[in-house]
Length: 267
Image 1 (spheres, rainbow, N blue to C red):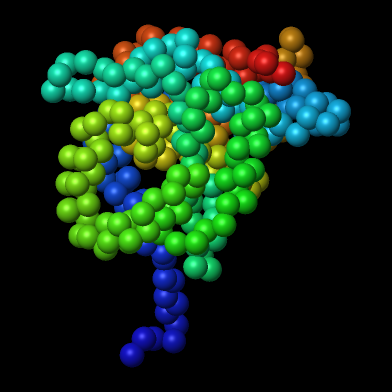
Image 2: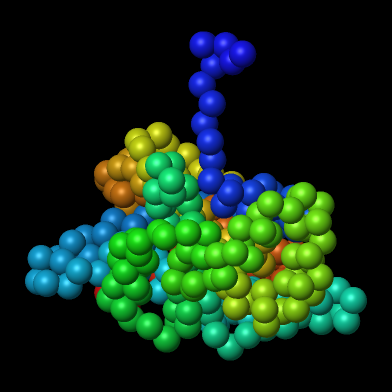
């Protein structure tokens, strides 16, 4: 008999993919940078643009800036092939993000991949994300938003023991760069840390060679143009796979990214 003081929460089978990501993520040799980025000017420009009818979102703009920087700094999003002693770098920048959906009464994060993000406008990325948010979840075939899967195969896969799931994923996905890119992209973005009012960073586990986690966005005093001013500061975590890129070129990517974000690149 279950104790009346205990509450059981039944998670949908998609949570098993989260467990798998944790297993694979611990195998990656990620190097992380915790940054404070002044996005006051960018946020101001976006607000002005929205008043004139441009509905582009702040997150979509961040994705666009990231994608454009990635193109300029290969192999930051390359897929490592250790047995062949090489890194596969794709010309396209596919950015993966998670969108919260209600699945069988429980809110869970489901992946969505913005394809060719570097070739799209901020408005196009905004519209694409909004469409993904409005997608109706029907069954296990919708566990990857925007890419309909076979619901029977997905259900059977999630029912397998984790060791067998990991073995199949390693053989059928992780050893095949093109399939890996098609399924999850090469850049991961999460906005989970922007929820709430606490100040700080988040450091999620990731399978991607490049992942960016947006932490809190707070007003705080900083020195700007020689004066102490209240500015909007985004707490950003950048994680790069050290097996893919060395420290100095990765630092150049980070420096370029922060410069563009603080200047309101493209707005």
